[in-house]
Image 1 (cartoon, rainbow, N blue to C red):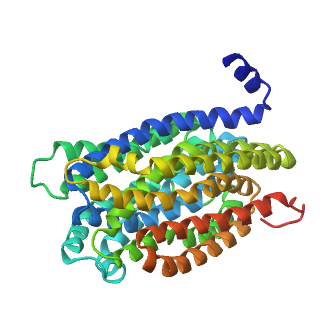
Image 2 (image 1 turned 60 degrees about the vertical axis):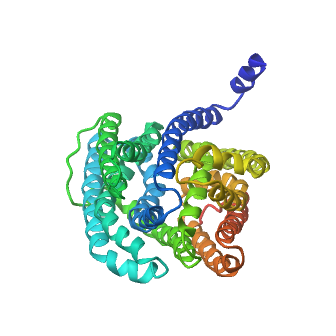
Image 3 (image 1 turned 90 degrees about the vertical axis):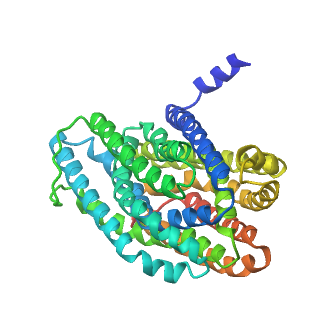
Length: 449
């Protein structure tokens, strides 16, 4: 059995092998990282259950992460292909570009941290109207850790893009550092510490991750760089315009998390916590499935595009997409049956009761319907990014958000948190149809990005 598998892998095109090997490394690192995350979630469930503390943590985490994650998401998609092209040029210019990127990442991170800290009471008034007074007070305390974490999130995003441009995926393992720090703080804290372990674990974890990842990125780049707040490197000419277009789409999609929290906050006590537990289990499935291939594919596809072989990149992406779509369908079939067992295995202990397991498993089942479409679309997103088709990507993102926002208002009142998950599945189904149509159509040579 092993010998035929080796022969089959040996017969793959070299670029398919690059994606497959990169995906295997990412999946391995993700598995290790998600294991740490799962243990952290078990510790949080044991200590806090489905409670006001978890409501406050989930609400603050989602809303506070919105701005830095949006900036990182918009820039990473265009930055990785730009870094692939830049490192193939003159080392001195590449080093200058990296230094300017570093300075701008620090400036954006500092601005995001200050903005979050100052605006959080207003955010609670607008987005947290359905939260209880106790949850609002906890959130005001948690933001003292989450606001500085925004600075480290943006710094980490730049380091991750630099490593992925070299097809190095150790950053995936380092994504588990915040979860590990929270786990240590939750287990080490004495009884009566309240939400302080969540605050300090989050802040310390993001800080360690950012510094560690920056050191690894510097070692991978191997060019001298000095941070400077300027834009004199020639790479900025194409990067800035592309990032602006992507930011429009990323802003639209970035509202999905906050709008889910806002919708859940209006459904009653602990709906945010129930939705959060289900979402974290889904992230485990997504990470071990499509995310590993998606992270590995972008630098490879960008390199193929730079070689001028667009037809090969398109054919590769379509093959991977169909395989991942089928894989996602299989995961749904198995996961629908296993959902109560998975929730019970991970969470049902301490303050997390059997009744909580039933509620989270119900929401999880509906959330799993998004997996085939998410799995299938992720590789197509990387294809269009490698082709610089950012205008189309932004338009699809705006369309996706419109459907998601509408479906939340239709489904959540009748289905509760499960309706929020079903709305997400419908959004990804629309996204897959749009991206597949664009990928199937050969791009005209004169089409603008």
